[in-house]
Image (cartoon, rainbow, N blue to C red; front, side):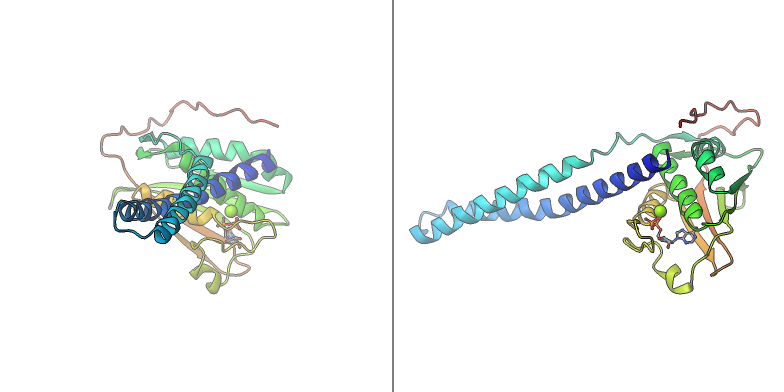
Length: 247
Ligand code: ADP
Ligand code: MG
């Protein structure tokens, strides 16, 4: 399961990266082709230059087809914003990862606020964010340890706060400065996109993420999301439609 989750995370990250590069390159490419087509229509064009223009356009079209197929690598799911109960989502994600964390001698403790307001969010994307935080924590605790997940309703600025704390190797201040930049992985098989993409997702939710860490002292990530205005408060006994754990 762990491998499958990791591979999924990495493929999704790479697909998104490829798609966003294709998108960034695709637009200027289209306008360059448009300009060249305008030149092509010039009746005073010498035969030699017309040939060069045709060649250039042919090459750009080829590039544009490659970009289109890259873009199709990652089809973003229909983005739907819905009321999300962070407590329930965190229970799901810890259930997902429970077995592999147990095997890694890691204990997970949930300290969930009794009444947590809903947020407006994309639950798939948020699951991805917390999954990455848990896997990072696991990878920071090669000899086992503990993860504490705390939620809190902060009424002063109407935010839901989630803290994910581990007892792992921690990070130096150098590492912290670049933590949310892409490709900052210290792992042999890491891609280094997890936190970069996580921050993008969190910012799409108009939330923020902070980190505090010291080498050898563990790491703590604090995430904040604005309360949804319309959403109801969670009932303390809200049902769990949790995903079944697979092997
Ligand atoms: P990846 O997991 O692919 O390496 P991430 O963006 O998820 O990429 O993390 C980037 C880097 O930040 C990791 O390689 C690791 O060095 C460091 N890191 C992230 N989370 C933790 C943590 N909880 N404890 C220690 N280091 C961490
Ligand atoms: Mg990661």
